[in-house]
Image (cartoon, rainbow, N blue to C red):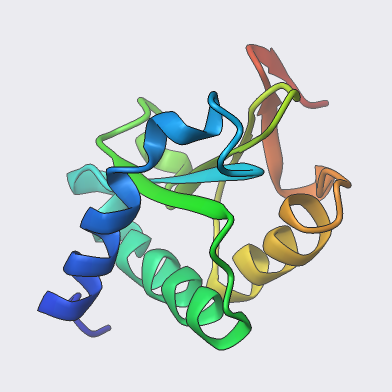
Length: 127
């Protein structure tokens, strides 16, 4: 597993500056990759790198990509929270690069929650 490059960190920094823009209507969605120590140890860097690569390949500019610390469920890392404009946030767990691409395609771009990878919608747990 490779480390994030300075270029990757610069891209993340630029996107972090836009995190409040979702509420102001500039972004149609926001993805937060949880990158506390437990998340990084479980593979969160690979999730972030996969998203950065997909954003670059697809020229995605209207989705905010950011990171945060631990979400409190270390055993379910790597995790990400997806927020689409006007919808309740969804927390996804046990992620792999393949799963995050499916979430990007189906939920973030397509509007359909990927229930098989979702732990919670808002504060409610998925069954």
